[in-house]
Image 1 (spheres, rainbow, N blue to C red):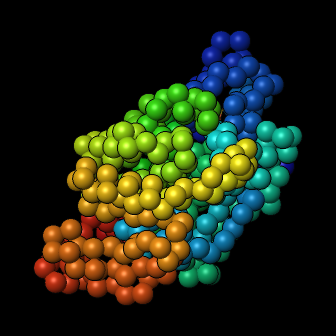
Image 2: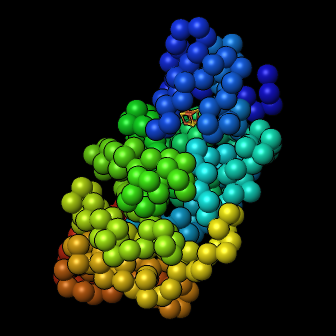
Length: 345
Ligand code: SF4
């Protein structure tokens, strides 16, 4: 048994010692002795195991704005944790050293940190939530699930930052403990998902709808990669999907791309493209569109959708002032969509 090996959740046995994993949209069928596409789940003699259960590769205290989650307990800190691996292989990944390492032979790596230790660290560092982030929480689901359950019992919130390739079953399983999620909607073309991410679009859209239906607070991020997803038509498709299928109160973060991993030569996103995406989002009826990764060049504040008052004055990850009163506009009383307190959650 490997150092970080642990029984996996959400799988079923098939004939001939094969198993099917139901954690993500790949739904891998895995023969005995073989791995799933993520390389962190292995069929050991007919039973699925995770190889990265407590293999923690990053622990940091981050402002919640860094996730980004702008309508979830603004101005608070979130203990951010990750285990190695990912179910996607995005050519522009900004965390490829830890997300892709299991594919380069380092099966798990990381430091053995238990759910109890994660929750204690959050409490000791005055964090009001735990974020499962940097890599893909779907594939370190068991660690996230066990930690989230303990965290909830202590009154802490739980947040995922995810590519949204979770199955509806995975959403249903984590839903009682998950308060908020930021999903990367990386494109609106299935061929882009297949070619650049080695994933598919449809499971991401299904997951987003399931999260909203489960009453989990959802924010969406799109990294604008020049030539990949930044045409006005595709941006309009993304904004239209969010507005019609998820709701006009769901915040959309459009974020600036800088070359990384296998796309180091690609140009950074021009500011005009970010401004165009913001305009398209607003034309689609979205109430909150934010431009990210453009320090000092875009307004990242939150405005009242009813009267236009600036309610949360934000620069980068810093909150300069917050004029919300119990989640309502201090000027006109409009209730702003979001999670402003964990009371009653
Ligand atoms: S998490 Fe996804 S990629 Fe990994 S084994 Fe399960 S279905 Fe396959």
